[in-house]
Each structure stands twice: as C-alpha cells, then as structure tokens.
Amino acid sequence: MTASMNSPLAQLVNPRKMLIYEPFEQFTMWGDAFKGDKVKNPEASSSMIVHAVDDGLDKKFEYVSHESAENSSSRSDQEANRPDKVQRRLAQNREAARKSRLRKKKYVQQLESSRLKLAQLEQELGRARQQGVFLGNVLDANHFGFSRTVNSGIATFEMEYAHWVNEQHKKSCELRTALQGHVGDVELLFLVESGLKHYFDLFGMKAEAAKADVFFLMSGAWRTSAERFFLWIGGFRPSELLNVLVPQIDLLTEQQMLQVCNLRHLSQQAEDALSKGLEKLQQNLAQEVADDQLGAGNYASGVDAAMEKLEALENFVNQADHLRQQTMQQMSRILTTRQAARALLVLGEFCHRLRALSSLWAARPPEPA
Image 1 (cartoon, rainbow, N blue to C red):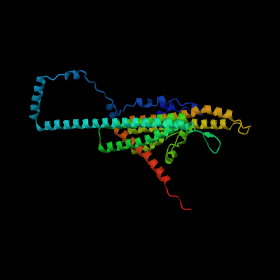
Image 2 (tube, rainbow, N blue to C red):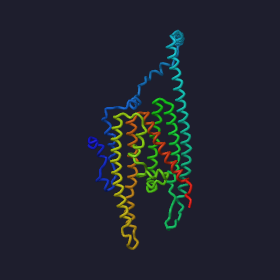
Image 3 (tube, rainbow, N blue to C red):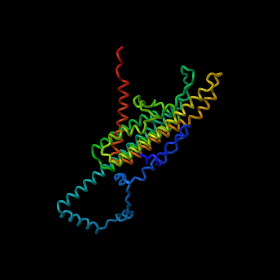
Image 4 (cartoon, helix red, strand yellow):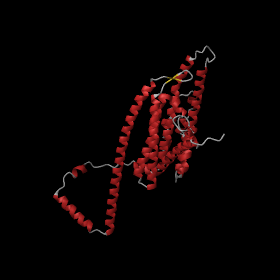
C-alpha cells in the first residue's frame, strides 16, 4: 500500500488546489498504475486480436470453372467415405456455423430495432424542446414574489433520463439471460461494452443538465428518494459502489483483489479531495451572498460575485462523473469479460432495487392517529 501512495496515482489528490476550489485536473494519470501489471487479462487480450485478411480471396472466387466443380464433386465423394468420427466433426462444425449465422442475424435485427427507437426518441425530444422553449417564456410568480421560468434544458434531461432508466432495465435483462445461457465471450463482451457505454451516455447527459441548472442536478430531484440517500455530487461514490460490487463477483484472483483494493483506495483519495474543495466553495458562496445583508438591502454586488463562482460548482459535478467513469473503466480492465458482465448486472440490480424501495416507501399506508 505504501508503494501505491508513492505512485503517480497518489498525485490525484491535491489538497492545496481543492482548498481554493480550483478544477481537479489530475485524472489523466488514472490508468498509469495499471500499465505495469505483469498479469494480463487473457480474455481482454484475446478479444483485442485482429487477424489480417487477404484481400485477394475475393478475386479468387469471382470465377468458378468446370474443373473446380468436378473437384468439389470429388471432395464430396471423399467426405462420404471418411470415418464416422470425421463425419460427426464436420457436422458439428456446420451446426456451429449455422448457429453463428443465426446469432449474427439476431444482432443485426436488434441494431435495426434500436435505430428505429432512437429515431423515434429524437422526434419526441425535438417536440419537447419546442414545448420547453415555449413554456420557458412564460413567467410564473410564486409566493415569494420572484419570477420563475420552466427550464427547457432540465425538462429535456428528465425525459432523457426516464428513457435511460428503461434502457438500463432492458440491458440488465439481456445480461442476466446471457449469463444464465452461458453464451460465448465474444457475445458477452458486446453486452459489456454496450452496458458501459450506456453509463457513459448518462454522464454526458448530466454534463448538459449541469449547464442548464447545476443546483437541480446536485439536489438529486431527478432521482428517487432512496437513491438521494446515497447521493454524492450528483451521483454515487465510486468507492461505495466497489464495496457493493466486489462481494458479488465470483472467483477473483489474488492479483485482482490487490488491484481492486488499490483502485478503491485511490477512489477514496479523489473523493475526499473533491469533498473538501466543494466544502470550501460552499463556504465562500455563503459568505458572498451574506455580505452586507444588514445594510440598505443592496445585495446585488454580493450575488454577482457569487454567480462568478458557480462555474466551479459545475466543474465539481463533471469531475465527480469523470471519477465514476474512470473507476468503471479500470474495473472492466481488471475483471474478465464474464466477471465484468456480472458486475454490470449487480450494479443495475442495485439501482433497480433502490428505485423499488422508494416506490414501496412512498406507497406505505399512513400510521394510525
């Protein structure tokens, strides 16, 4: 552990910077500590192998001569005279190729269906943006006397997030079916990469929502009540998610456990640095707003100064999501393909159960008077 503290990853935490709530800019070194690992992930490495293909093959099959047809006929006769063991092996190969073609056809159909759903969603979002812009021009005076507008960016985010939750549930069902059906690693890797991209898409959506209203995003109003209980700068703490995931992942090697422990420690360091910086920013914002509060009522200068610091608040949200994304990427490199699929399934089930808990809590019967 001492060696890890002296590694470049330990430099992720810079208390001096965070005390003045400057952007936390050290995440680029996140993967350095794992580059020197001697233990490679056999599944991950094998999945990245690309075999060269001879372009001349296409030209070889452009013409089929009479001689090749006769040779094909003679080969068929030879295959018919081969022993039963060879015949069975050939039949198994043909059956495997047939199943592979069926799986490929199924994936193509799923991609086409997803493309149609995406086009439909884009149309719905376009209509929502038009309605949001219209509503945003309508002023609504609340009981404090201030004017309030409907934020079209937040309305769009809420619609996108509702669709994201539905898609997350579908992807969890696909992962569960694949793990129970013992599909091959290639197909499982496709589901893992799709699941990771789905979470990364959420981080992008949140970055846009933070530009529209960072206070709304950090309040967690877009999440259920049970999820808000675990909220930290617009989401979950990566170290806490690791505590949830690791006990549910089977057959971790000693090397994998060491890497996960190192990753958890580094995540906690980065979380502590962000939390201290955010606390300092809150103190400064409160001081700016409270200045001259007992004066002649002219607090405009203090509010203007506070507004200049709100960009730093947006940066904290983006940095927290960047930490979450980097943690997920490092876990996917540490784990095998099957273990990574299991981890994504556990994460999806955890979020789903928190939402179900919120629904049960909201629907609980009132206590008797």
